[in-house]
Image 1 (spheres, rainbow, N blue to C red):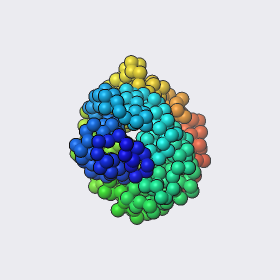
Image 2: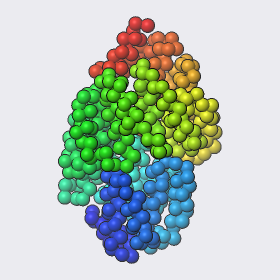
Image 3: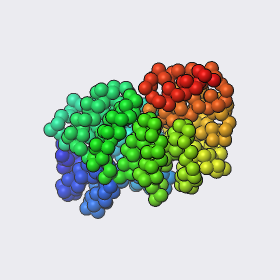
Image 4: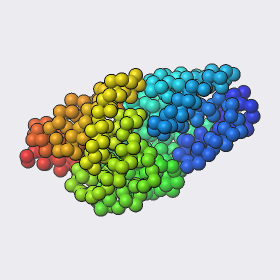
Length: 439
């Protein structure tokens, strides 16, 4: 057994492999573009190392695509012989991989939580659990999966800055905004190249309606996130949202074309960023031209994947906005998947996701009454599809707009008043409240 930089034991043939594994984890946490190459180097050096095999499967699943999920299933299916001489913690990681690959996210979370109870410095388990709770819409555990382990961490433990960045995001998602800024600023002071920390503080400024401060924060820390992998596009997305909140639609369109849109990217988060921003522009009365068409072409190739209901809803939106019949296919295939699969995501799709995707399509078809019928009954359950408060806010905005356009004025007034009470300084909230009251 050889210990990593945090005192966690690994089963390896060569102690140098653990140092290499530390380098991989640092790349994963810092969203380095060469993280895959770092993993490959360790794999080549010790292909029988249990955790490098598990991590390979984890990375496939984090990409949320059907071909890579199939590869993860193969890794999971072959993992038991590799884990034969592994320690108990590594075997739990193997169990988490098998659960996650099979669509049992709850089972994976139980395994990661068990690891963290005994090994609170296992930062890989912490980050994956943080991710898993996030995509279940469980904000309290996004925060508390970190809080439960802080007793084992201080500034002398390598990776402490990354723990603070996770803490910052969990605090923001549970409305602890001042504490979130403090934790995020501490994380960035320790590690200026931590996109997750920069992102967490950006979320705070979005939620408290301070777009100028948010733009200044993101722009002032560009050096810390523009070198990241595709997650950098999500920071561009946040800055564009703030320009939109500030009423500068020209800046948003310019950012979309020059910074967000990547014609070569087919990653799910990039597609969601693009669809969400184009729809928000339209909700602000901006003509986005033919931009939906190019985005829809990408989404069509992924319309039947059903990895995450949150993502399916964005694919359906983009396809419907482009007038593609594939939008209806997303909804119908999603319903079939929801009824036939035993995966956790299938249950979420059945309870909320299908209605959400249906509402996205109905909105773009101009069937605004159906949007209200689909979304209004489940609006407090939409969190279960995952994503952040800021990301899911799109669906709340579309519901208000649809209620107005459908002539459901009592519902529109109630929803607009609710939103204004929550975000009194938000320009769009003010405009929609005034419109609802004047209708």
